[in-house]
Image (tube, rainbow, N blue to C red; front, side):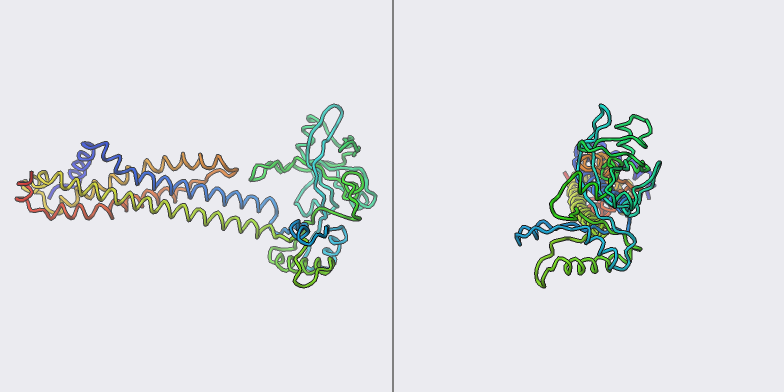
Length: 405
């Protein structure tokens, strides 16, 4: 019996003799493994991004906003109002805080410096609902909201852009030409998972935004409502109760569509996570098919190789090689071919993963497990599809093989 090391060396020699054919044979494995690595890395990156979004939003968070599609079908324009938000806070159980909100963009001016940013009109509940902490100064309070005071709390980015490192507390900025005095600065949160600057905004009292900035004609009109539940488990109940309450307040009859939408942010993001996982599984399935096709290519070429090297096989058997040696030699050739393809495929998959992620805000996540599994699977493909040619080679009659031309 020939030593395994000798069989291994003979296999590598045979592969080196046909480098171009060997690489073309391994091409299917390379593409398949690269697709597996890239698909799961991009999918894992997307899921990680969604997890970070859930963390930044807060896990027990619900949004209520007007449903524009409902307005267009009924021809009646309805809005959410401050009274709706108060009713939710008073009548729905399990609610920790409710923040009625108005969102808009505006030009902020301090001295000769301009900066375009988001302006949020809300109440003292905003910081609680959005998990915001003060770095300096104070938050807006109930008195500010009641009086429609022209005060503002700003994010770190606004302070940096307008005040260039100076303390903004007590200074006045103009928001769409209306002066607001800065009373506080929020702690920075940095960029969100999707690349949005979470510190580029200012908060003003809801009533000040209604009277001085948007000047909507509908009394008490707001843009949307953010609801923070006491726990994650309470969210489904809060969502159902809020929908019932708003239907009753908006006098929506049975069978009529809601003129509002209630969205549980965690459910929305969880749905996105499932979609991402399904897409990853779909891409993984395509990659699996590529690997199978690559394996079939290996089997085909190995069968050709057995035919071309029949005389060589006969000589080896004549000098003492057993059926097991011949079988092992061709099997090792197939496995080595697959493993080389798998190694190149892993490197190509890493590059592809980064290229694909450049089209999204989520960087790819490569795990040792996925890389090891892809490598092991490529080797398994070599064993699975290389065994039949190796078995066929081992069954050759030495005399017939020596006569083969």
